[in-house]
Length: 77
Image (cartoon, one colour):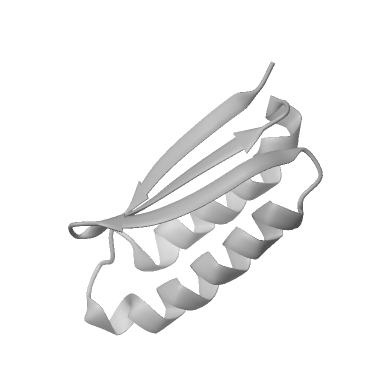
């Protein structure tokens, strides 16, 4: 069964833009290359950055999820 994950990230402030860009770009390409990833989409809407990832199963998504959680702690609100 596939697992679909949707996240919304918002910057804490302008000074966090470049770290945010660095971490999200890294995370996106890691996600695309990860075994078990079916799709990865990113979009900006209003003041939020949205990600949608589709995984073959839950076990494959856990590494990407932990990366997003650390990103949210660093630069997002």
